[in-house]
Image (cartoon, rainbow, N blue to C red; front, side, top):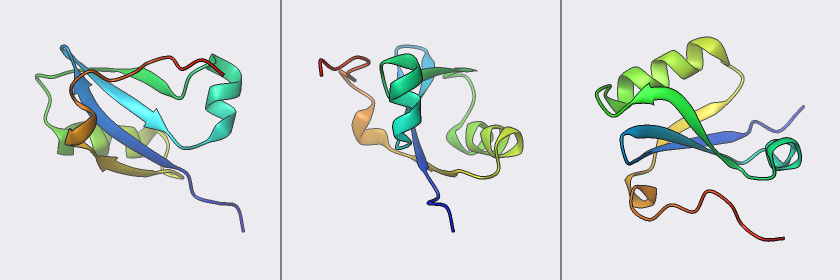
Amino acid sequence: MAKQHTVSIFIKGDTWMAHHSDPAIREIFDTNILPTAYTSQMGAKQVIASLKEKNPGLKYRFDPTKAFGAVTWEAK
């Protein structure tokens, strides 16, 4: 059985960001934190519902601890 990866969402500025646990995301984008298409005008439950609808194979959670000063790139 394949491992279910987690996506933690948080707000940075006015954008919902997604922190992915899947190492393939870092391989492809050189980061594991990517912006979503959603602004902070949407609530966390709405964002998670929309993301789940598009990719139901992942586990989603809201992580308010990442909201301030989030790192979007890390040196290897």
